[in-house]
Structures are given as C-alpha cells and as structure tokens.
Image (cartoon, rainbow, N blue to C red; front, side, top):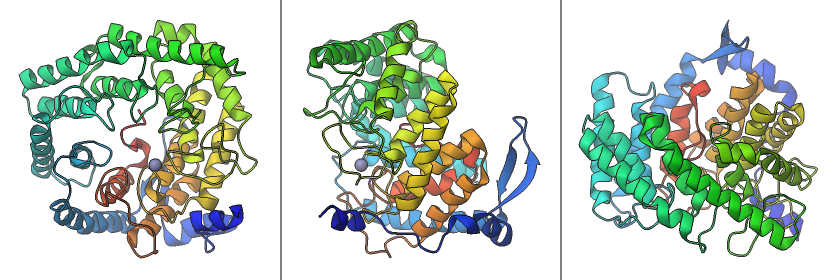
Length: 425
Ligand SMILES: [Zn+2]
C-alpha cells in the first residue's frame, strides 16, 4: 500500500544521474564559474542562455497569471493563497534583475501597493500571521508605503501590526506554528526589521513573542514528559515540518539569536530539541510530517526535508557543528531524488518550493552541484502544466500556484540572494 502511495507522490528524474552533473554544467553552460568571492567560494554567474530562459518564462507566465487572477476570490487577501501573495510577488520582482530600469521597478511597486490598499479595507487586526492573516497585510503594506515615501501610512501599519502583539502573547488557545500561530506573527515583525530597519519594531515586542513561544514549548514538554526540551502541537498532532511544526518554530526562534536575551537563555533547550528531531530523521534523509506518522512519504516544504534543511543550516551557523551541515546535505540528496511531485509546481507542497532546498545549500556551501540541481528543477517547471500534476485549489496563488513558481524563477537571476518567500530570513 505504501509503495503505491510513494510512486504517486513523486516522479523519478531518470535522466539526471549524479555522475553527469559536472559534465552537464560544463557542456550546457547552466552556470559559469568566473570568480572567487571574498568568502573563498567560486561565484557562479547565471549564464546568458539561462537568463534569457528565465526572463522569457517569467514574462509569458506573468501574462497568464494576470488573466487568471480575474477569476479568483476577491475576498481572499492572504499571502498564502490570496491577493497579498500576488503583491509580495510584484514587490519581489521589483527587487530582482528581471527589472531592467527604475520605471519597470516603480510600475511593479505601484501594482503591489494597489493590491494591498484594497486589502487594508478588509482586515480587522484579528488573524495574526504573515502567511494566513492580517499581520501579513500590515507588514507588507508598511514596507510598500515606505518604498513610496509615504512614511505616515507606513508608521500606521507598523502600529497596527504591533498592536496585535497583546492577543498573540496572551491568548492561550493560539498555536505556535508558522501558518496560524505565534511564529508566523514573529515573522511579520522580522519582515519589517529586515526591510525597514531594526529600529522600526522594538526589541521588547519581539521579546514578548519569543517568550510566549518558549513558554508554550517548555510547558507542553513538561506536561508530556517529552525527551525533547521543547514540544509543540497543532490540532492535537506533534507536527515536525516548516509550516505547522517544530522545524518552523525553531527556525524562527533562531533568527533572533543572539540578539534576544530569552532565546539566548534557552539556546540549550533549542539545541536539545533540534537534536531530538535528528533522531526522527528517516534513513532516506527525509523527515516525518509528525511524530505520530512514521511513513516516509511527504517531501515538500510544509512537511519533510525541504523545510527541515533551513533549520539544519541555521543550526550549523549557530552551533558551528558539522553534523548539522551533514543533515542538511542529506536533505538535499533526498529532495533531488524524490522532489519532483505530482502535487505540482508550487512553493508550499510543490517543485518550486523543493528547489529552494538546493538554493539554501548552495548559499551555505557554494557547491555547484546544488545550483545545478536548482536549475534542473526550474527547467522542469518551465513546462508548467504538462506533467499531469494535480491542479491546486488556488492555481494562481503564491503558495499553491503559479505566482510562487514565478517567484522562484526570479530568484534564480541571483541565487546568492534567493530567499524562500515569507519564511527564510
Ligand atoms: Zn503545503
């Protein structure tokens, strides 16, 4: 039974054998090694034919996206499946070399703000995460207003976002995960700091949120007598992955290490929890979707190795222990083997999201094999809709649909600067 499910889940990439990779890079010119950067790594410039392919596909599919958006639900304003995700795509495109001049940049920034302004009328400061809630609309609008020089409206959005903190930390019914919980609110605050400067959000607010997340994890661990120092649940399940689970929560906590005193104070518990997760890794290199589920089946950002890789690389940077990098590399290998999915081309549970595994590894190691893998996955996604994959519920959205794939392609112009959207800092 499991075997049937497994073959449904992923497509074997038969044509690409590991030993062909260096030859393919040299002969097909995916990338060219031309300089050694300040860290001692070979810096690869994306070759001209690839740049052309990326640009051509982005232009073609942006057209398709804009036609498709006319038929989407106007009331869905989330970053995850709604219109704010499209605004995030426009904002991102404006910062990449897809734009050839400042007028193209301005055009995209204006389009992004138009979408967000219509969403600001709908939000009530209730749903609290960047991906699925009002916090995403406020955080993105603050950044976009600032880009347009309207600092008054920018400040207003930051204020509204920060005002949500009280219920985030005091409501005991809230989860801690990224999609609907406290770690997803924390991302919104960090998004503002990254794009507008650290002073825009006070350290005191960040401290309150991380304290609530740590408190919740310590208390559940104690209650369940867990071997892991921190423990989290969502809908009564101990999810492991980036979207609903421990991986996403710990990854977000480590973003404020060592600047946050409370995270620094609990760094041993965080490391202990990561080490506990390592004991759950499958021999394939993949991670389970939850502690309750022992089948090695799901392999996408929301569940499995493609999300875990980010935490492992962060752990390697923080704790400087080689074993975390080795786990990250094993995540990359299993994603290469099984990462082309029948679920389609998306960011959350699709091929574009999986390709970010290679980009994350490439940024850490400078290994050309990882970059090559990212480009081979991109090549597969260029034949969008031609692999008999399932059509997602929101086919044009950022996290399930076409917008996410376009976002991924635009990150390939400068792989060193790539970031998994709405998650990677
Ligand atoms: Zn997903």
